[in-house]
Image (tube, rainbow over all chains, first blue to last red):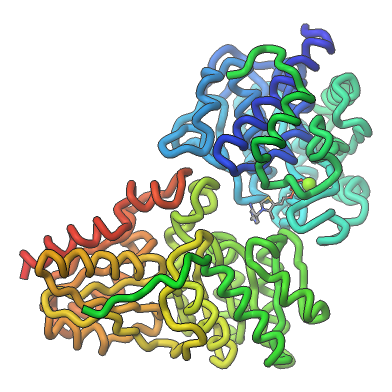
Length: 281
Length: 317
Ligand SMILES: Cc1ncc(C[n+]2csc(CCOP(=O)(O)OP(=O)(O)O)c2C)c(N)n1
Ligand SMILES: [Mg+2]
């Protein structure tokens, strides 16, 4: 068990990784990545029961699916720092012939990734399929998934949400990155979605809210509770209230950094706010 | 040999934005829809000037296509805007049933087509969209080559009754066709006269074809260059007239060779005048992350590749 300070330290390093990755290629998505850094670090270090190494079928371990594939920087950083591939490989993000494609893919065989994502709205269905495969295999481990809030505007999500409850898929914890932002502005200006909690509940899910989605203790507590709610006949949804761009003051609370890389000066400021902990790649 | 001057690099999507802005001022029936990509599609100006004629759909492309179909009932001319992948593959049945089969006057405007989308990688780089769209009965398929042509095409398709797929791209590329040109759907543009080989190109490959023709000319090979901006309906006459002179052809497109321009040209030739043909296109593959120039080189979609294909096809005469 890592203590909270250790997880904070990893998170700080992950923020540095994210900034340095997108800065180097002047492309990619820092905003959503930073907002979910604490969640990923908690998930891979504490919450999930993972095996050593990587195999596609993942029998006998918890699995994670990233549906909002554009936040690949945080995913890659945490996968590397959890031992799936060398951290030096973060240097190749988005470069020609890399395994670290702009959006996650299985095509290049990157350990840790089990499905391509990037085209939004498909990951919930995939996660449900994997959850049902677990049941068929008599595997009692869980499926975790992450989805953007803007992403929920894609109708396929609601087909999946209806299916999950209707078919009692109760071995999944689907987390929504509730940052209130998407590309063209806040979710409320683009397409107000009303209460996401009420919607999931109306579809038959158990919903749990984590008010402080950038607070590691709150995440650990909330996810432990979510875990205790699985296996009771209902799918479980976690509404994770995060701050887009968290940890870099000028990137916080705005959609402006959804898909924009910092320049040299902005990088330096961001890095200064997050001193090296585990060591840069 | 006729040469063309680059008036300065510009992105074709900005040509779309400029065309849409002009339509907003001249045609009150034109309405626009977007699925959370206003900036990428350069729709800001239209929206500023015509907020009541713009519909932000959210990230819901299937909904967007069918709302667009509905807007035509009552005489609106909807222009939908999102990336090419989300404009076609994602919503194929919505387009098929509610737009193409129902013969609705929707203009599907698709940016970031092909490999030149760059670093976002294969999930966003569709290389199958021309094929998907040309297979739909009644669908007009246009792939413009530069800013000026994209602006003109955007304006022209508003006057055309029926569904249109307008394909353009992300990067800044050479802008070399005339400002404020008249765009005629289905009419190929004869850019360079030649006698040894015909190069028929579409989209970003047209400028590469012109560059190739220059180099070939220095090598003593006379290449005819035709810009096929409209892949469907195809200007068969322009192609047949040219090959009756040159006796061989290279087609060039930023698309899979399966289902693209090259196959449409091959069908015309095999029916009317079987002719040796080489294909500049991707070879049944997905794309990947990289800069546009790196990707076009790796996948053989640039002037160098066209030159080699011309030299090869001439030997096959
Ligand atoms: C099907 C599809 N449509 C559009 C896009 C373009 N796109 C990428 S991210 C994004 C916004 C996503 O919003 P959200 O899920 O809230 O993620 P956040 O911006 O908070 O990271 C859009 C529209 C896409 N990737 N896939
Ligand atoms: Mg969001």
